[in-house]
Image (cartoon, rainbow over all chains, first blue to last red; front, side, top):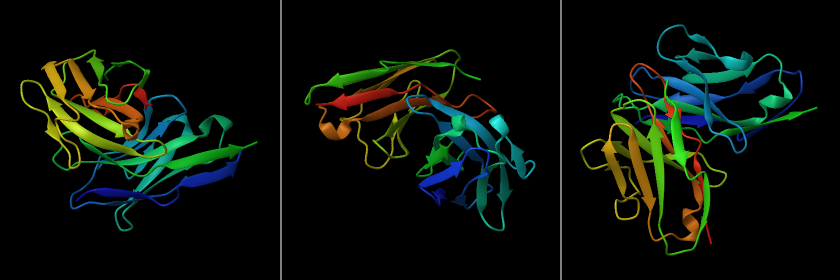
Amino acid sequence: AQSVTQLDSHVSVSEGTPVLLRCNYSSSYSPSLFWYVQHPNKGLQLLLKYTSAATLVKGINGFEAEFKKSETSFHLTKPSAHMSDAAEYFCVVSDPSNTGKLIFGQGTTLQVKP
Amino acid sequence: SAVISQKPSRDICQRGTSLTIQCQVDSQVTMMFWYRQQPGQSLTLIATANQGSEATYESGFVIDKFPISRPNLTFSTLTVSNMSPEDSSIYLCSVVPPNTEAFFGQGTRLTVV
């Protein structure tokens, strides 16, 4: 069965410092992986996606993630945090049946301190 | 891409009543998905709605509690029936157009009192 585990429920960084949000996945197949962001009282927005092309994926707002099959990881990074990055982040894997079903990680709350 | 209009955006309901949530998409899609996000939790899939057939429910969700309609390829409704405070959540619909990623509605924030 597919699953994702976000290793940190809460991450706090200072503005201007790097961001690292960790995600490990479990999959019997070559997975499609995503990072979504949810700002307070707003909808879900796709940050980036991995679908078996380049292992280093660049997304919006300066975020990127690297797919590492040997480590079954898909960590999200950003070189320099901005106050507007404060939000809930979800690592997501798609169901292998390719029906469009998504399996969400538990979420990581990113706090950015001035 | 896909633009999803979901309504209501929020509601406060009395226990024992039902609420129907609507989801309208600006393009035809084969499947629509309904998710629940309980307070402080992640998203959990409730069911998958195909046009012209009964919805497929995930473990822990039943049709009597969450009946779903899918009358055409651009519209779906989810009803939360006989509500209790434990049903207080954000409910989201989602679509996955061909060869692209999932898109989500803005969500319906439900509070049951």
